[in-house]
Length: 498
Image 1 (cartoon, rainbow, N blue to C red):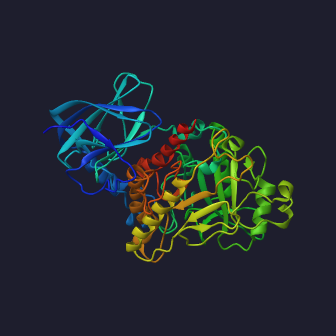
Image 2: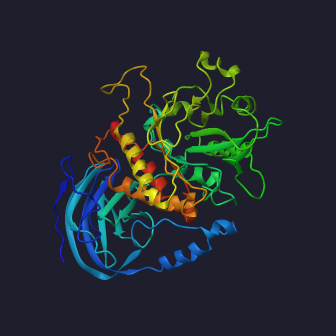
Image 3: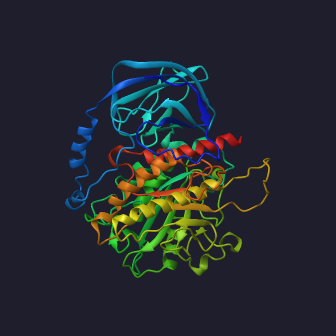
C-alpha cells in the first residue's frame, strides 16, 4: 500500500460530499485554526480495537443513576469515529509536504484509513515544531495532538469516519475562551455555545430534564448562553426554577438566586467572560411578567453585575457581567430606563416553534422547531439546525478601519439555534433521546461542512463562518464536550480579520 503526496484545494465548484462513503475515500484535512500547518509524514498501521468501548458500555449501563425513571431511557451519542489503536510496525511510511493555510480545507491523495482495519499516523509541522495524531484514535471523542518537541500550540482533532474528514481546531481554554477575542467584537459576531433549560440537571421527570451536568460544569466547559425559566408567585418574591409547569427537581425546589450566585462566582474567577442569560416566566404561579421584571430590577440588578442596556453590546463592554435577554414584558415603570429605550435586550415577542423566526425587537433570528411527534421527525429538526448554522455563517462583522464599516451602524442580529425538541407523550422523543441524535449530527456538520462555500443545505456564501448561539441539550454527558469545543473553535476565524 502506498500514499500519494499531492493534494488540491476545495473551491466553490466542487460539489462532491465529504461523506459519500465509509471506505476507500481520500483523506480530507480541515485546518480550522489561525495557524498555518504542514503535513510532513503519513504512516499506515494495522489496527486493533481498544478496551474503551467495553468500558464505555459498562459506564452507559451504570452512569447517571440519578433517577429510576431517567435510567430507563438513558442513551448516548454515537462516536464520530471508532476507538482503534495502531498495532505493530507501520506498513508504510511516506514523507510528504502538504501545506495547509489557516482555515483551509484540502482533499489529499492519501487514502483514508480502512474502517475497522487501519490507523493513519499523521505528523504535522508548525513554526518548526512537530505534532502527531493517530486517526482513528484510541478515544471515542476528540483527541489532543501529541506535541513531539515542546511546540507552543495545542491542537484538538476530530475525525469523521464518514468521508474520512480530519478537522483540526485550536485547543480552547474553555473556562476563559472569550479572553482570546478582542473587545471590539459585538456579541453577535461570536460563536457561542448555550444550553436549553440550563438548570434542569437534577432528578426529574425524563421529559423535564434537559441537561447532564450542573450550571457550574457548563460554564467551566465553555457554555456562555443560559436559558432560564422561572415561576413567579403573587404572594412572595422567591422565584423557583421550572420547565414548563414542572419543577426542575423532584427532591426539592431550586431557586433563581442560587443559580445567579453560581454565575457570579464563575465570573469572579473568569473576568474575561460574559454570560447571556435568557429569562422567561413559566410554571403555575399567578405572578405576571411585569412582576418578574420588577423582581429582576429590584432584587438582582446592579450595574457592576448586569448589562441591561437594550442594545447589543460589544464584548469589551460586558466582560465579567450577565447580559440580560428578557423573554417577558417589562413593567411600565421600566420604560423610561436608558433614556427611554427600555430595559434589557427585548425578547418579549418571541417566535414560537419556528424554522427561522424573527424576535419582535429585531435583535435575533431564531430556529426553535420543537414539536416533534415521532422519532422520524428528528432528522427534520437536524436539517433545520444545519440551515440556521449556514445562515449564521453568512454574516460579516465590519470592524473600524475595515472596508464596509459604518460608524454607528446597528449590530447584526443574533442567530439563536435550538438543537432541543421534545414530545412528552413519546419516550423516543424526550430530550436525551433527541440530543443523542442531534448532537453528533451537528458535530459532523461543523467539522465537515460548516464554513465551506456552497456546502450548506442552501448553498449560501460564507462570511465570517460564525455559528451564532447554538443552544444544546445533554452536553457534558460522561465528560463529552466535543460539541462545545467545535462551536468555540470557530471563533478562531475572527483572528484572521486582524
